[in-house]
Image 1 (cartoon, one colour):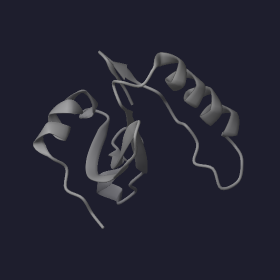
Image 2: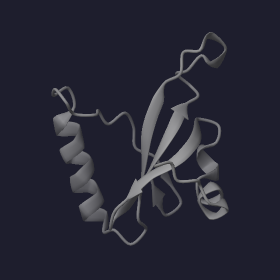
Image 3: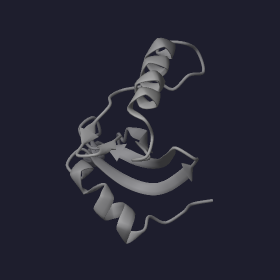
Length: 97
């Protein structure tokens, strides 16, 4: 099921607009929201070579220690079969993506 992105979500993710084109709200949990997006830096839209990524916005109320531990865990799994790699981590004001 495709979930439309709200105006509030667009505003919240404005700082990503030069790097990613957010397509849809894919899911959410207690501590984060996940979006499907196009990686504009690594895609060639004219040649129909599109690189899709999942963007995970971590909730502002998450503790810094919890966020740090999750990032370390995801990095430790990079390169394993059936695991989506962590490509980057961005911090903007009080938001981590």
